[in-house]
Length: 98
View (cartoon, rainbow, N blue to C red):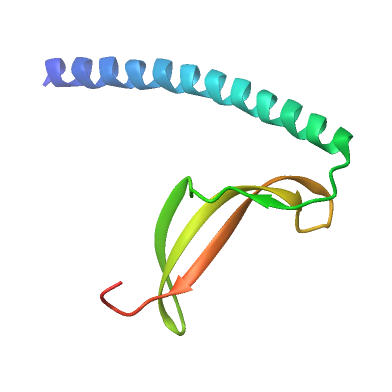
């Protein structure tokens, strides 16, 4: 029993270390995205651009039935009208077979 507790403690320690490293990488990525967003805002492009290839594809369902939802990186006015980098979701109704 004592061996099992030590093994779990070791695993938890490994997870904590990995989580701290992951947070550091995410902080760096966030800083780079903010820098890019600020640079694009300074250009005052006035256009909307959506990458054709989704970075994530998911299924969902609403009251009408199943949906195929794709998430794309985009640049343009966000919900408040301020231009910037954003994620755009495209949903297409599908039948039960997709």
